[in-house]
Structures are given as structure tokens and as C-alpha cells.
Length: 444
Image (cartoon, rainbow, N blue to C red; front, side, top):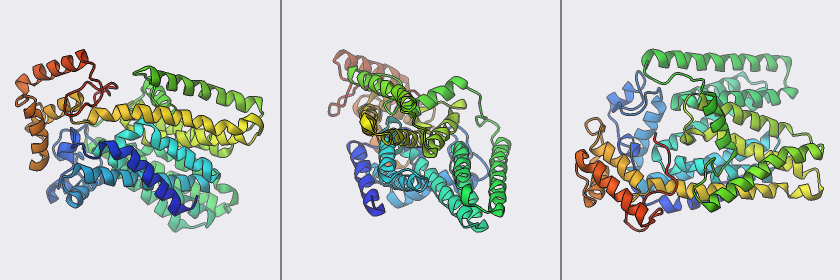
């Protein structure tokens, strides 16, 4: 698929995914993070936490702070404009990810299928519905730039390109600290490109790895010194396994109705049959398959610290390409196995179905969104959150229409709304009537 056509295809897919949510207002963290900042606030992000209001979990992300400022200045407080922008960023990332996969040996059709699987995964919803999380695509672009420059640097024995690659990953670290989880993917990409490298090129590559390691350790030390309350790298083995499972199961690890259960079980069965079929047909997994799946496992180490479903950007990207590559390996063995890539359709359907339900948590009539906004406007964050007047008015008017004007009575009102919705079976959007989401996401 030519590059322009591939990008156009992914734009259409991203817009179709974001379409139902385009006119939903901002929710929760978006209310105070997506706003124009003062120069002192932008400067403070380089020597302190990324959130000027001090509400969010402490972290060192100065480029995310700058990104939020620039898009607020450019797009104003229109949630629709911001969601369209996020969808375009997602499409651009998908197109460039598929391009990188082809360059690393995956055939164009499988690369596009794997990237499409990532777009359909339920976890991808977080990156275009929850506007705050659009910074994931920014770190994705930094990683892709680093990977392309790394390959060029090795192939052309170019120290300048290797330096550019390291700088790009340094930028990714300044966007989000969890970009560290993508470092092993770069190492695997580089190792796979060393066959044609000169002796000097190989030495430079290992020097490059040393620079990356030093940059990562320096960031962690700097972050710990500036932000002693920031979460330190953890060792939650169960969280790691949960994160990896979520990356390999686009529809999620939990069910919320009969259809989601059927799709999940069908994909689990196909996933279990995949290595068995490879063994029976004596098909050796390609380097592409092994590299992408290993990269997914490394990227899932974010779960060692925080097994949150909204931070699977790299793990889900790499796992989707690994699964598509494995199906392509099996298809090359011939016979009935040539239809193996069709199994990905089951995973895509599961992801799309669960993703639609997950997105409804952010619907303006969702009791989950109502509670989030109540906390931000009237609850524990009321005196800290700096919310633009236009954004505040939209959220406040919605809450006032339901009788929520102060925190003291909000819990009782929301509890009653939830009970009524549950009693009447309102689990999906129905106009402006409050509903209890059928797939309620965990608290952040």
C-alpha cells in the first residue's frame, strides 16, 4: 500500500473510531490540563512536576506540559477540535508504524493488518477520547523517529544519525517517563540491522546503547531528586502479567456481556492454537515475529509500576504487530494455514466492541464522567484546578441540571442516579439521561 494511501486509510479508520465521541465535552483531567499556560508555569515544568496545578500524580514530563499549552492555544477549548487532532495524530502514528514494520521485514499487508489491530484495541480508546492522553502519540512519533534514524545510522555508518536517534528518544523521555519501556525495542531493532554494519558501525551501535542507558538512569535520578513523591520503578509481577495479557487481548481480559465473552473466548482459543499450529507445521517464527513480541513483553514492564489500562500504548502497538507477523508466518506454510491472518478479524471485532463500551465512560451522561467532573469542580480538587471559564461552564451547567451544585450533596444525588439507571436497565447512552456504563473502567 503506497504511503499516501496508507495514511489516508488510517485517517478514515481513526475518524470512524473517534466519530461517536467527537461532540462529547472535556472530562476530568482534560478540564484543567488542556489550557493555555503562563510562561512561569512552562518553566516550572522543567524543575518540578508536569501538572502546574499539582493535582496529577507527580512526574517529569515538561514536553507534555508544553504540548498541552500549544494545542490549547491553537485549538482553544473545543473538545471536538481536540478530538479530531488526536485522531489525526493516531492515524499518523499508525501509518509510520506500519512503514517501520515493513522496513524491518514484515510484508506490507501484514504490517497494515497489525497496525489496524492496534487501532481497534480497546486500550487505544484512551488515546483519542481522553484528550490528556494524546501525548502518547507524541512519544510514539519520537520513538518512530529514533528507530528510523537508528536503522539509517547503522546502514550508512552515520554517527550523526545515531546521535539524532538518541536525541529523539531523549525527547520521548521528556514527554513521558514510561518511554523507557520502548528502549529494548530500539535495541532489538538495532541488533537486527547489524548484519551489514562495519566493525566501526557495530562499535558505534553499542556505544549508542550505552548512551541510551545513561540517559534513562540520569532521567530517573533527576526525577527522584526533583520529585521524591513520584512513583518509583516497581516490581509488581502480577501487574506485569496483567499488562501483557491486555496487550495480547485487544478486547480486554474481562467480560461485560455475552457478546464480549464470546469474542474474548474465541480469540483466546485462536491465540492458544497459534503456537501449536506453528509447531505442527514446523514453521520457524520469523525475526519480525520474535522481535515485536519480545518488544511487547519489555514494554509491558510499565505494569511493574502501574498496571493501568490507559498506558499500554507501546505494549499494544508491538503486540499487535507481533501477532500479525506470527499469522503471516503461519500463512506461508500453505494449506489451510494460509487463512491464519483472518483470525485477526476476531481480535479486531473484540477490540472494537469493547472499545465502544469503554469510551462510554467519557460520555457526558455517564455517571462515571459526572462523578469525575464533580470531584474536579466541587470536590477535593476544587481549589487547585485552574479550569478555563468556557470549559468550567459546560461541565457545571451539566451538573447543575441534575441538581449537583456542591460536593456535600453530590454523592447522594449521584448514588440515586446510579440506582435509577440500574433499576431501569440504562447501561448505554440514551440521550441526556444519566446511565451506568456497562463497562466501568477502573479509577485512575
